[in-house]
Image (tube, rainbow, N blue to C red; front, side, top):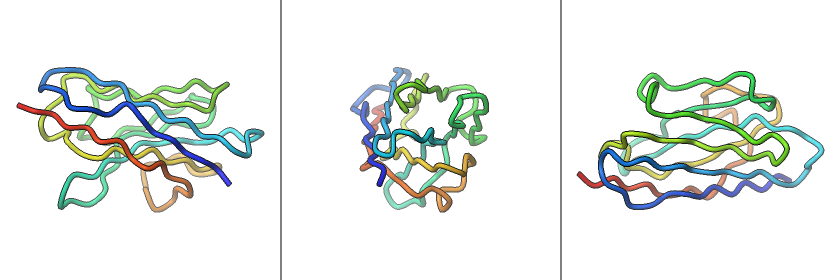
Length: 123
């Protein structure tokens, strides 16, 4: 079993920056591919970014390119999502997901999920 804990959300103003974090634990002999998704009220879950287990490959949804950066601390199986120039439309619950084999942006392919962290951007 893998435990996923995501954190770092909060209430911010438009234009601010925020850094979300996610740590995976359990079965620590494995390196995991990790990703971020988000879900706004009344909307479907949306892909944000993904990173491979070794940090060499990153993928971004078109809607966040240029403002979002995913990175990882491999030794700790921890990833971060840096969000700059936040907009009200970025308001959502952000979820971290982990998978040993898949590293893309399809949420249905990830096996383990965090509880989510709320990001609220006021205008």
